[in-house]
Amino acid sequence: MPKSANQFLKPLTQKVNSDGNIEIGGCDLVSLAEKFGTPLYVLDEKTIRAICNDYKNAFASYPNTTIMFASKALCTQAVTAVMDSEDVGFDTVSGGEIYTVYKSSVDMKKVLFNGNNKSFDELNLALDLGVGRISVDNFYELALLSTIAQSKNKTVDILLRITPGIECHTHEYIQTGHLDSKFGFDLTQIDDAVDLILGEYTNLKLHGLHAHIGSQIFESAVYIDEIDILCKEIARLDEKFNLKLDEINIGGGLGVKYTSDDTPLSIYDVGKMITDRLNTSVKKYNIAPPALFLEPGRSMISMAGVTLYTVGSSKQVPHGRKYVAVDGGMADNPRPSLYQAKYCAEVANKKDETQNEKVTICGRYCESGDVLIEEIELPSLNEGDILCVYNTGAYNYSMASNYNRVEKPAMVLLNDGEADEIVVRETLEDLIRNDVIPDRLKK
Image 1 (tube, rainbow, N blue to C red):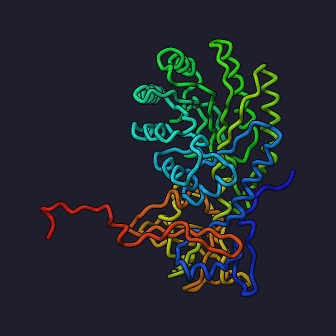
Image 2 (cartoon, rainbow, N blue to C red; image 1 turned 135 degrees about the horizontal axis):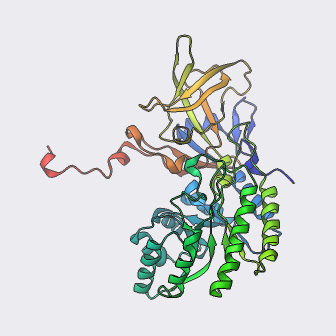
Image 3 (cartoon, rainbow, N blue to C red; image 1 turned 180 degrees about the vertical axis):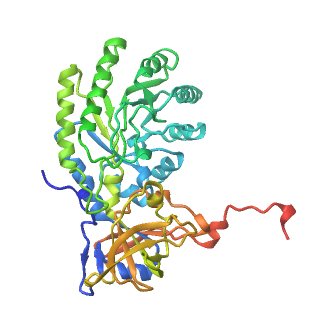
């Protein structure tokens, strides 16, 4: 099977140009830093499109497959527009994501709304904007959604999200399929949920089952187990309730290559394994082949992104490590602090230098834990050098904060030598825009 883009550490267009600088998408990264400032989120459009095609080609043998981008990985209007142009659907988990997708002129029938505690306002918005599917997570949501649908005299197309009892070997915070999870109906609760849908909540139309087993998955057996469980449940529900469910959504979670030590599965290998197992399970349980939905997020966007930083101060601890600080850190990439995530970096303006030193890259925020990369070999760093951290397209911008009242970075999309600003850098005025001083405190 061919390699897929999620197995590469760097964007597919990355190279070193004649000036000895790193170039992505035909754009010199040092020049980008000068023009747009740093920290700067950078996305390579060709890599995004290549990954979309990897997924479509990998699942082409199963005729009824829909790829839905997990918007939580990176949700901006421009990213949504690129995905939409590749005929990708969208898995959303908030009113904000739904609204962003809607404002990007997406056909809302291609959108699924997912999440464990959807609010009244969010469900109301989803129905008003015509979201195609709602994945119902719990009994509270069943009742709330039914009430809203009745008030609008609408029938709502739903899936039931279930907890399949599968535990994959990822960080405990990003496991979602094991039994002790906040997400989904336990397998023992499914019949009660179906009873309510068929009896009391007749304005909810159940199409199938949804499960998600985690994130940054490097093992294949979990997908095989998940598909078998979903098909078995469809057969059991048909026998008990005469239900002809015709959709399964197996989530996403495929891993990416953050460092040279990571060995993610090829999208093509996973595609063959999933479609083979689905065909086997369909025959095993004597059910009609269901429509297959997938929700990749990280593996569709992460490797297309890099973050540029400018090097500032440094400190050599006597008889210890050397710290080199950059002008960003945990507010624009909280993953190392949250998950002990590891990254790889290069110096964009010193790619040809071979004499390295071991340093720890730290951020500018007032936390001792604000460390981006520990103990990395890089050319000797000086103030003003441009550091390029790879594989930051997923869960960096989307989890960014204004900690220490620092403005969030800009984002640019690169393609054939063109750099388009798709997220404008925040200003000091943006930081105080929603602040209100009570009249009694005003001078």
